[in-house]
Amino acid sequence: MYTVLVVVNCHTHTPHPPRGNVLFRVLARVLPLSITFTEMSSEKRFVCSICGSAYSHSSGLSRHKSRDHTQSFGNIACSYTECCCRFSNIDQLIKHLQESHNHSIEVKTRKFDTMEDFMAWKSDIEKSSSSSYVLHSAPQKREDHSCYYYYCNRSGVYHLRGKGKRALKLQGSSNKVDGYCVAYIRACRYTSGAVTVEICDHHLHESQLAHIPLPESTRHMIAAKLQDGVEIQAILDSIRDGVEGAEIGRSELINRQDIHNIRHQYNIEGIQYHSNDHSSVQLWVDNLQSDSEDESVVLLFKEQGVEQSNDLNDFSVSDFALGIQTCFQKDMLFRFGKESICIDSTHGTNIYDFYLITVLVLDDYKEGIPVAWLILNREDAAVLNQFFSKLKVRCGDISTDVFMSDDADNFFNGWKGVFTVSNTRKLICSWHVDRSWRKGLHTHISVKSKQAEVYHHL
Image (tube, rainbow, N blue to C red; front, side, top):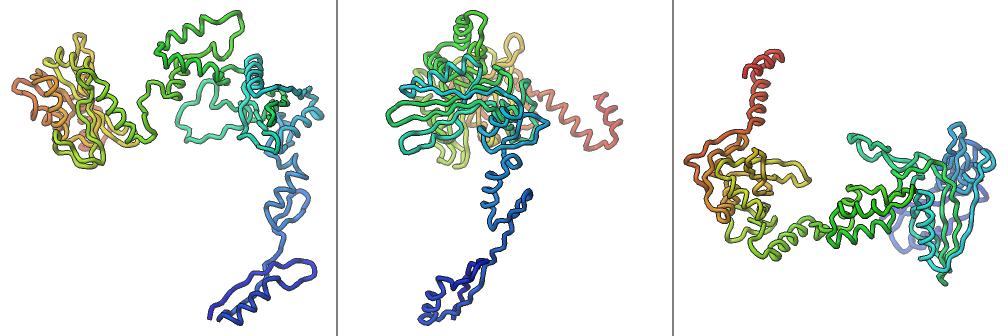
């Protein structure tokens, strides 16, 4: 025997038998069912805090607030601090500013033959008024036309997403004014191609070029020049040489960071060949190896998740290694490698927590020059030995006078397993020596004053 609970909606007016009762009673005669009928309460639990109207569902209360109490529950607040009115749309805010705060706000209409004509006019309006109108959402399709709603890019409230650890920019934390601007453009594009436009160009904030994005036409122009190989400084000079008169727009204030952002956005001369990092690195390495006319800049490559090749040893399937040396680095190693070799390691700089090992030499001015890089997931002597072996095949045996690294032995053990070290002196980086001293002082001396005194005599 099975039990079925049937929930029946109960109304406040004259009750009537539930429509499904007959069906369930027929089923109970055929099947071994025990049916229990219960009534669902129609209590109106959602009450308006202003007028006391009650509703059974929260959606009913929301509709009531937006329809009857807009000035109390709307998301858009009046820009005047002493005014507590709120509104659900920009049209209501415009009417309120006109009637209550004596704003002279004019809404104009225009017509265009094509969408291209409208976009050209919009670009001219933005340039002349030092403003920017951005799409509010995707076009809303109707029976015979589509609606495009553009609003001022500074309209809205900034919501902090991070934890506040980074310092704020000089011009502010965001382009938003922490309020709502009434400037907007509404365009209706009909199936015939014609476009009707309604525009309100009244801004409730001052115009600041620092908060205006680069025009799309300028971005396309710079991207095309970068693609053609034009240097960044040449692009900046050509833009600034074209300034005529005293009128300066956002395009004339472009800087190097803007161009770098465009290069990254259009992936110009970038190395991200695929959205997946694993595939992108594989494609990049293949491209380097195929494009090299002489020696490839790739010393060794062990792909993660793949068995090691025949020319490698001591790598597991999960290991990753990528060794790089350019022709310039090879020449510097030949020239200065016999005097000194320095090796430094960093990790934790990306989400994969890989190690970056840098091999350096000192030039005539005692300035460090990187002569090889190795990116890998573990830095033991066996793996380093593989990297140094590839380095020896390309550059020959290097008998250096001084080998400097940190206080770990894996670097020197990997080096002496490949290169000649009979006349090599091993030195430890002074920073690592100082760190070891401080660590020992904290371990063996608990009194801060004695720690400082002992450290002073080291």
